[in-house]
Amino acid sequence: MSEIAILEVNGKKYEFPLIKGSENELAIDIKTLRGVTEGVTTIDAGFKNTGSCKSAVTFLDGEKGILRYRGYAIEDLADKADFLETSYLLIFGELPTAEQLEKFHVDIANESLVDEEMKKILNGFPKSSHPMGVISALTSALISFNPESVNVESEEEMYKAIVMIMAKFPVLSAWTLRKKAGLPLDYGDKHLGYVENLYKMMFSKPNEEFKINPIVLDALDKLLILHADHEQNCSTSTVRIVGSSHAGLFASLSAGISALWGPLHGGANQAVIEMLEDIKKDGGDYQKYIAKAKDKSDPFRLMGFGHRVYKNFDPRAKIIQVAAEQVLADLGIEDPVLDIARGLADVALNDEYFKSRNLYPNVDFYSGIIYRALGIPVEMFTVMFAIGRLPGWIAQWKEMRENHEPIGRPRQLYVGEKFREFKAVENR
Ligand code: ACO
Image 1: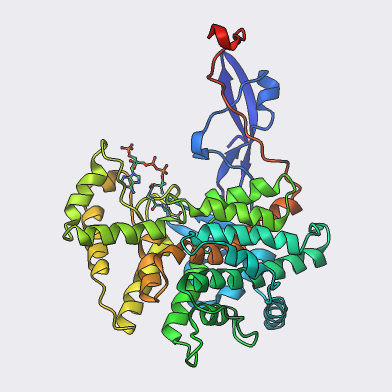
Image 2 (image 1 turned 90 degrees about the horizontal axis):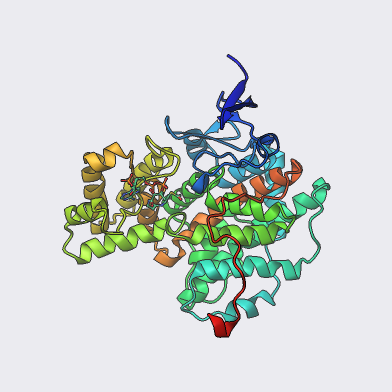
């Protein structure tokens, strides 16, 4: 097979190299396109066909429903690893040895105190604030307390910055939840595991002993692993593009959090539960909502359905669907919203509209159901996603800087007015 792609533009042929990924995917390298064609560019709204980088972090095959972090299957990681181990794998490229994992945990635990001044910023937000806005702002505010920019050439400095954000982000997230719930802030316990500590900081009550429910802990850990990375999605691309201007790690992460907030991305987990609640209030007639989703004159979309990349099934949704059923059974929760979710999924999976467009339930169709069962308020769902995605964002940012990627700056096709003479205001 030839290793080139040929493009014909207005009768003239140009050759471009074909590059191959480690899973044999092919990409046309069009780096020289504008130069050789004297200005021709490509248009690909939403980057549906455009690779923005080479990456060795996550492999995803949307047709076959495969997801791997650094070569390891998501099914194996969800079953056999814990979230901190998975985070180490994503960020540093290899599964940690027992000593490396212990050191990572201890270093994070030792960094888990947040400057007390941060509380003033947290307290400045009204209770009605959306937690995603608060956590994005608090992540940005962390820069003021750690103003030195990370020297990406220094392994030691990179490690320090990574440990710092891995330590402080769960604290700030838990504090955001507690502030909203009117609970006193919890400083965690450095002797607990990473996810155990997060769990404590979120749910402990000042007037009772905190007890860990192993079912809840296991479900939380699994959810965080499933969300930990997903190659060049909207928020990760945001983190990379912001970082490509050499903005710092925390500033890039803060931008990623804002990107994740939207209902077409991480905000879908909140939107799914709100949709299911609306259907319940409306008498539980999910057929009506299937019809609305199919009606092109109605902007309604079935939240938690469809995915930009998975055109077969979302492997994370499969794992999480089983986990959701398990958690509800183990906790003895009967949730009518889950019945509506099951009904909706059954109908949609057998409906020609959804089948022909390869629209399957995605990870967020089920994650909200678990979060709800664990007693996490709906507005915090996307923050939970952000805690899970943090190691992925860090890994991608680190890779982008270490590969010395150029500043991200797309082209456009201008379709506005041609040159016009300026008219003074009295002549318009
Ligand atoms: N409900 C109804 N129809 C849908 C849905 C949906 N959820 N998703 C896509 N479609 C239809 C579109 O109307 C379009 O139909 P057409 O071909 O007749 O015009 C077709 O399916 C293709 O849809 P696109 O919007 O072009 O697909 P795209 O890849 O751009 O969007 C997205 C993917 C944003 C996830 C979309 O499926 C969606 O909005 N889903 C609901 C929101 C959601 O669950 N987001 C979470 C994604 S997962 C995550 O971020 C972790």
